[in-house]
Amino acid sequence: MRPHLLALAALFAPVGLLWALLRGPISAVAVSPWGPEDPWRNGDLIGGWWLWWAFAEERAGRAAMGGLAYPDGVEALLGVVPNPLDVWLLSGLGPPTALLWNLNQLGQTSLNLVAAGILARAAGASPLAAAAACALLAASPTMLHELAGGRPATLIVWPGLLSLALLLRGGLRAGALAGLFAALQGVAYAWHGLALCLIGLPLARDRRALALGVLVGALAITPYAVTLAEHLRALPIDRPAAGYTSAPIAGLFGLGDVPPRVRLHPLLLVGAIVSASAGAWRFALAATIALLIALGPGLTWAYGEPVMSGPFAWLTYWVEPLRRMHHPARLLSFAGPLLAVCLALGLDRLGRLKPLALALTVLAAGLNHQAMREVVAWGASPTPPYADRALPEGPAVDVHGMTHRVALSLQPFHRRPLMEPLWFRRPTEDKVAQEVDRLARGERPAPWLWDALRARGLKTVIVWPRFGEPDDAARLVEEALGPPVQDGVWAL
Image (tube, rainbow, N blue to C red; front, side):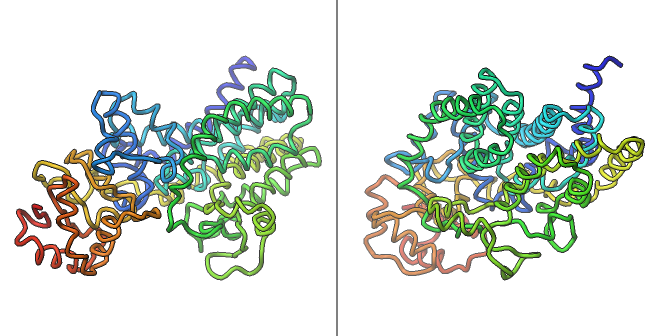
């Protein structure tokens, strides 16, 4: 085989392994959206699904955005759905379906693997060593961490990996392209973009290229950054603490006492440490930076009480905005590829033992199929609860559906304008929203609430218990409005 064909085949070999490991789920790719165990009660998946649908509706000339936060229309949406680029692009294919949703996630993961291979080759690894190391990466459940959480936007790390590969190449042209890819990474997920700046420092050998990349990247991301800043006033009030989802140390060694989504392949970290030579210190340092951020401000072996503060805690102490990085575990998506580069460079330095080491690496990756299938819920319900319920005409208040966006899961089905289901997560001085909030908690609202809802043009009150809520809210609505027109639905 010609050298360039061998290099191309080596880039896509880990993708083939990934598809082989997920052969069972892939056979049912069109059945239901991959992600959390109960996707239709997961606000992250629902937010992305709804936004994809809303963008598709807008492209078709139907004002979906005006059907949220009725009667005014949605405002400051980036405060609660801050990374909409991927679903905006995908909306050109039409509204979301299980097939499109899953193929997008599988495709983004495949691109991440190809980009990791390109980074390994840019670092000087041979095609076979890069392919073997990325095969081990493909068999690491952490590659599906964001897929398991229902967040396709934060699954995307291939722009950042390509940015690092361009930085290694050096030169002004590569530096400018590196800046553009870094900006794209920042738009896909702002925290990944910021972390990329730290990760890239040890890898940048050409200072002029680095300076140009920083300038080009800053200019390219400015429109998004300015828009995002304007929407920050809508940040959720129930946002978790810094480090809410951090990677446990046990997961770095693939040990079984932590969820699969935070497990690297058992040999990836060990193999990278043992086999990487002194020539890979830059990548070892970059991977260490990513891992230290992923471990969060409080280091834990598994999950539980932190045993000590980590370096990231000091970083958040000195740089206060970093306290808004609620999910540092997402940096595993960068740490894994960087460890794979270290491993590839180490494999190339094993001399006569290299063929055996390559074979054992690929064999170990292939044997990890069970862990890869456990990390994501592949066979969830294809539709959200209550999707088959018809509603009367007119705008509605979905009382329990406001919690963590679950009302959004039904709007693509019933297409009724909604009182904003994001109010519960944001500070608001709207008295009507506050009273609906009380109602959802089972507390008696002010007597004027019903007239206020009618004055806003709302026609229907929905009380469907998504999370097994008690009947308190339904009882209070029935006291005020009489018998329901159908199960869980009252006319105003």
